[in-house]
Image (cartoon, rainbow, N blue to C red; front, top):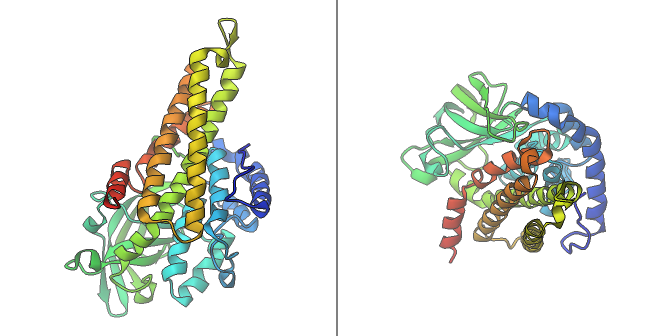
Length: 380
């Protein structure tokens, strides 16, 4: 169990909420983890259960079916999800997509989509990356050309989380190819639109239960009212929302690192070697001590970042630093913990193997560690 006692960033209400999350996960998540890993996606029934329990889109205002809370409530879910060893895409919906619609959506868009996102009836995704474009979003080629009162969208996206399940996708498009960053727009595309197609559920190293897809747009027509906010404001909107996305990844990384450490402690204290437990061997004790120390520092930093973000003060540079530090910590501790499992760590039947596989992409998506260093350097 993840120990959250004594963390000043949370109060008694958050702790009670955490208990609710654990009960929901124990019933609807944990028993299905292995099956979802094998099938490559999470059941829609889990989304509905999460929605019914109030675990989705906590920051959505009450008038649109949400609870109107600050991001700390999202963070509690993200921590428990990562600690459970799940890569289900509910944090993408709650921490990223929902805030785009709240911040930039029209009243009609908010009333249409937010209540169903809160309930889990609608699953969402955001489509930025393309086969030839990753971190440099200005290089995207997916186009949205006006035709009367419609956009006609053509292009391809890849590595899209929730892509197989998504009912609604925010698509980053070029609406003016000659305007550079000022020619990008965010457009809502329903999965029922003619010409919209899902490609493969991509075969990844890890995060197997997080459906990750190619998406294709072949003359997809959507009304111009599907533009999220003003046309041409896409890059500015993306840059405004990236800090929370990166903080969300940092939250998951810290909780997963803690889980890896806890598994290592459990394994080494029960495993015997040379007439004593593995944990009694000095090199192992020192390795565990170093990991525990780094986790202590990590939790203190994460709570500082969460408090700043809840107060509206977390900067893009600080969020980038958080993603950089916590995802690198996650990778290091997952790797060390696997090593302390010995040969058992290389067996998929042990949870540490899944944690290790799932950790690798954390240093890539949401901006690579190298991009994070560049973002931090720009703030110096």
